[in-house]
Image (cartoon, rainbow, N blue to C red; front, side, top):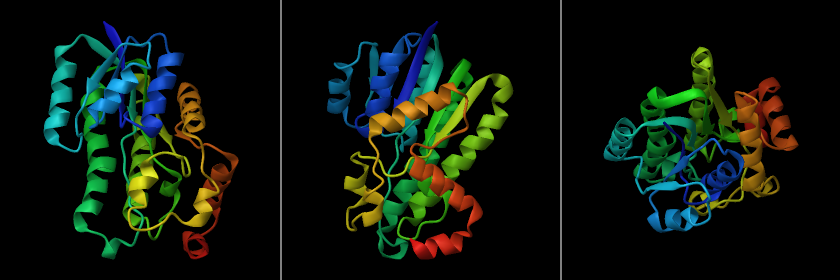
Length: 250
């Protein structure tokens, strides 16, 4: 039986970095399934990895793409050692002035696709398997100007923590990764019409550092992974200071 890792959003940013670090770190994984829409980038990534790679150039917001993955899982003699739900998007700007479909796309990718993929993968998760869901420090409190994104990542965080408890007796461990801003292509999309708030750029982290921390915390069976002292302090402040006060400050 073949042990595999599945990584969504693997064509760039943190998804690409997860593929590289999983390849270098986990000799027990026989094959990495990389999922993203941009096939050319997945082909380029494949040449950089020693572990065999299966390219799934799918748009996971589409039901037929989830169905295809489900059919592949059912047809192969595999166990999922690691599932990394990395694909996600955001949009900076006021909710009421943004195009309706853009906000719905955030919900479809960050919430619906992540939930459906997790659901179809669970029957194939191996003993001592890992699920890593990419949330965000934006999940810690509501964020005006980033309303739908922050709400979607709050869902990912709470879903992951509940799932971690549900799957504990199955020896499947779930970690929600909650970084601050990360130097990836994410902000090229998010800043479509509005620039990132200046102070967030001060906290930008390197994707390789965030991914290493996420994998370390996953192996340590932690439910939440927060990279960097500033983001850990921010999380604590969000617990002890009323959100309305923080929202006014930011």
